[in-house]
Amino acid sequence: MADTTPESEIGSIECFQNYTAPEVFIQGLAGLVNQQDVESMIRAQKQMLQRFEKTNEMLINCNALSAGRLQMAQAEFKKHSQLLMEMKKDLENIFKRTRALKSKLSTQYPQAFQVCENKSALVEEDDEETKEATKEEEEAKMKAKEKPLKRNSSSTDSDDNGTSDNNVSSPESDSP
Image (tube, rainbow, N blue to C red):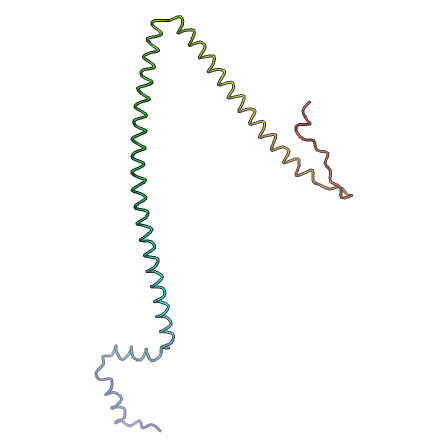
């Protein structure tokens, strides 16, 4: 049996005399924790650290590539913007010259200019009518395509004998 004499207790207290109270408490807790669990947590943390370092390196590389491509895209964008501005100036100059020529022709040859304006107005009207007709035809075609789809879904219904009822006519056969 273990002796619980005051002398044996003094010997066990003497071993903790060099430590402070928090250190004694921590050492007591350390004895309660399973060392294998602690080691597995440390290993898991190291693995996560390695993954994070790799991910960080990949993100740094991606960031560097993106920065390089951004610089190239900005340079191209700047060139294209300048080109568009030059084209705009050129077009404004062309329209200005065209207006000047038109006014000059209208003063020199008023009758011929009036005839040309009438013809161009007719051509513009024809173009508008053609565009409207084309648009109406396309809408009609789209509607015609939608109708057979709706009819075909109902045409696959079977009667009591198991035969399908295909008496629905196509839009082409509906026309006179």
